[in-house]
Image 1 (cartoon, rainbow, N blue to C red):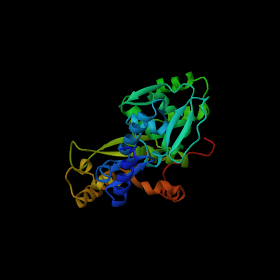
Image 2 (image 1 turned 90 degrees about the horizontal axis):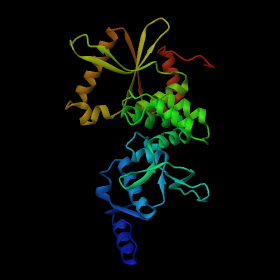
Image 3 (image 1 turned 135 degrees about the vertical axis):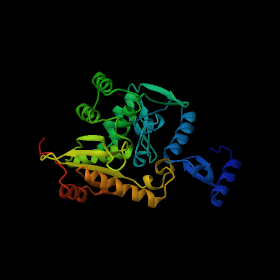
Image 4 (image 1 turned 30 degrees about the horizontal axis):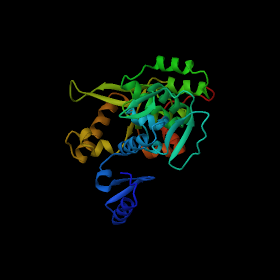
Length: 301
């Protein structure tokens, strides 16, 4: 809701003080119980739909457009909201809104909101977001079959004026639709930056104890001696999300993971596990990967 009249503003202020309504953006309020049931991506979509109704000339871009397109995007990139404006228009950035001068935003409408096209959105993400976060929406678009890598690279080449064109091309070239989720994409980007580029994604190995079953690993490296080491990126969701636990208790999930690791070990596959918090401490993670003998790219290559 957006209160306009003095009476409405006073009522909303009183309910905010009581705790039944929360301020979600400048001039925007929502019922607390309803708002807290939404995941962060859907909360941002609500805000953009409201802002789009008040500012019909706005075209959302970058990470904000990626969210409206239903692409993976780190929670850390949800704010500020990104808006494309003409190069002739002067717009001062705010704490919650960041403006970007785009002469041709290549706009489409999603759920009543103007956003940049999916190809323009991915180019802007690669151009403006840190590499760690830029890979996730690209992987998601490829995984969903929304666009092909070659056509996306051709679109990059077709843009007459684009900053850091080669950087954008290099990030897009690393996109891989076999990446299962945004967390894995983010992890892969950090590994690449640290000099441990992943050799293969989502590789399957036959289960030694249950014929017909396979064990799939997130990342796989082949050492110089031919031995294999798998990387697993684990989040807490795999232990608590019903869609991922298949009705198992946390203990059962942990036991299954232990059995899975033993099975892979019996197949000659070593294992190194990584968690989201590890990505914020690349020095420590690098030391752990070196200890596990994960192949490292030679400097300068």
